[in-house]
Image 1 (cartoon, rainbow, N blue to C red):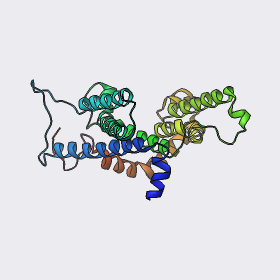
Image 2: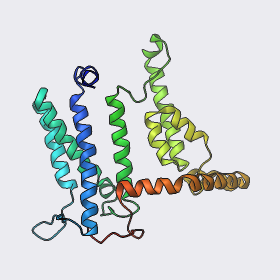
Image 3: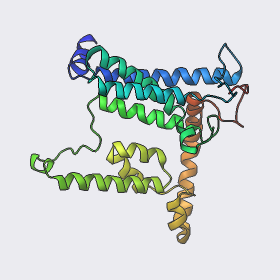
Image 4: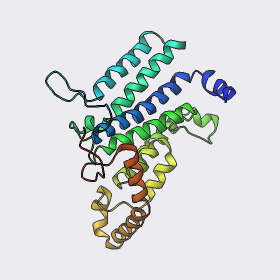
Length: 255
């Protein structure tokens, strides 16, 4: 393990990225545990309020830590211990901020609602992206082509545009997770774009109303998929982020 860490992480200069990722994941996990304890009214934790009694969301210290870690690293041209410290600060800040991503997106407190699940989704995708970068994976990299083709900017631009179109089609078909992963893995975007759209998606509403048989087929496929995966997916989301308001089982009203 020590040899692997030295060869693949320390020598290539990826230790700050590893520390930032670890800090990010640990911060998210600890924050979710604390907020769930507050919600259930257990333990010594409680919401932080300002002088006027207004709730102070943890996105606030998160933004501050991201600024300190980001600008601190740039200003200090961070290396060695300094680079590790600012990376940890940035990772902690990012964990706090993205844990309330849905609040930023909707400009209201939706932490314990169905919309609040978007925070968990963005955290999972972010962690996966950083892990891929740590492993040396470059998004939108072009594989299995000649040296001449790699040097042709037109090919690279075309590949990016085609993948963007596939991601957009996948998104319009109501397959959000496939679209997110398709940004990183073009074959996933191709798979999502080739599949039938989910009923109720913009693609289905626009195109399937003229083709009743296709709409019925899409509905059957979505029903089979949901019957197989909706339960496990729901339980995983509840385990990661907590049960949304209105579906809570055995949890208190803490905030």
